[in-house]
Each structure stands twice: as structure tokens, then as C-alpha cells.
Length: 308
Image (cartoon, rainbow, N blue to C red; front, side, top):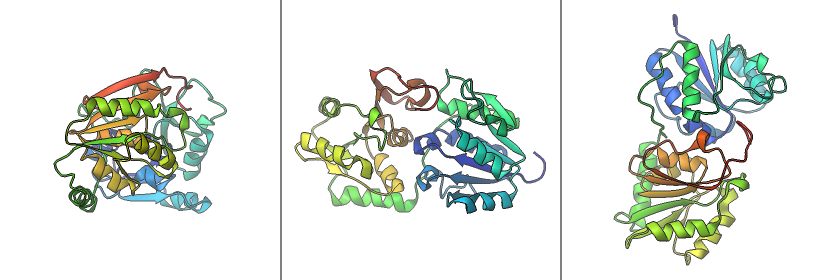
């Protein structure tokens, strides 16, 4: 690729979408070890799978219009917008950042409304592909071979792992069969499966030494309490920073979840079996990217492609 390139990765869709970009980010770093690879994250949580790792040089968060001026000042050679990207805001943002080569997908719908002409290096989105594969296809535009090994990951620090160990020791869970549960879906309430389904699955897979950990953010607080009540208030309810949550999810032997970012975090652990409940979202796009999984379809996909 010549002299040291400056690359900006644009993460603007969600933490789950960011995780599914991970194999592409790793391939970029493996093939361009000398490049400066920065991340722009619309929300801090979107960059959390990669912060602290050796895959990125810097992370920039959105702080209003001044962020665009700062990114323009850096004069990037390449910007890459992670899939899905069919929104005018994403295309305008990439255009204003001003990288010479602006890499993204092209879509069959909303071509003019999404102002996709503002991007100058595009590859067609394929509705038959998982999001991981969609993102990897972007490498073709940079003449980088798609790697055979494609694993999602979530980088945690020693401090995060120590938190998880301390939590297990403090609550005498070290030898328990941990079942993690995410009954919510943040603001996306339409994704949420009936709580009775979670109870049914917990009862089906629990063991004598099972302990239940209920995960979710502030938006999920009400539904977490309702599930705990159905479980006779015997579960542990957690609302922590996302890095600590990820470290604790990786300690679970089983993770039962709606189609959410936490579900994708669980897929980054080889020891964790994932049971994913799809209640109307796109299974082709966001199925848990692991062989250690069970998928339960409660409602077939009812969403337009690729966004809600």
C-alpha cells in the first residue's frame, strides 16, 4: 500500500455491529501492520470491543461538529464505514471527514435518499450474507485477501478479568454452572421474546449447581426485575460497564439472549454455548457467529433490509 497509510474505521450502528466488524479489523492490521488505524465511534460503547487492543492506534468519539474538523485535520487516506451503512448521515459524515478513498457498501434501495454517491469506493451488499462476511467483502476494495480464519472477539483487560474473578469468588460462584441471560434489548423492544420462554429454557438446561446471572443496561432494568421475580428472586442482576460485563459473560457456560450486542459478546467465548432467540429480526444477517449455538426462531424476519 506504499507509504504509511492513515485509515479511519467508522462505527455508527451499534455494539453488536462493531463486534461483527472485528474479523475485518484484524485482517486490516495483519495486512497493514505499519498503517495508522483509528476508530470513530458515534457512542463510546461502539468501540469497546477493540479499545486497549493493539489493533487500533486511536479512538475518537462524537463530540459534535468539532469532531468532524478534528478528523479532517488528520487527513485520512482511507475511511471504511462498517456494515450496515445505508443511511444519509453515515455517507455525509464520511464525505465531510474527507478521506481520499471512502469505502462502504452499495444497496439496491434508497440509493439517492441515502446520498451514497458521496462515497467513492463501494461493493454491493449481498442479502444472503452474514454481517461478518459483508464486512470482510470490503477488503476486496483494498486488494486484501479475505482470511480463512474468521473469529469474532471482544478485547478485555486484566482488570476486567480480575473483576469477573472477584465477583465469582465473592458470591461463591467459582464452581457453579453459570447461566447468563439477557431478557431485554435496550431501546429495541420489538426484539424481546416472552419472559416465559426464558424461564422455560433456563429450566430445561439448568443443573444442580446452576446459578443465573441476568444482564442488561438501564433500559432493561424493568424486564430484568420481572424475570428475576419469575425465578423466585434467586438470580444475580448485573448492570456494569461493558468491559466488565464482557469478562463476566465469558465465564458463563450458557448464555440465553435475544438478538442483541450481549448475545454477540457471548459468541466471542469458545466455552460459552449461546441460545439465541430471534423474534422477528434478520437471522441471515446477525445469527450468533459460532458453532456452539442453538437458534430459536419465534417470529420470522419482518424487517426491511438492512435496517429496521
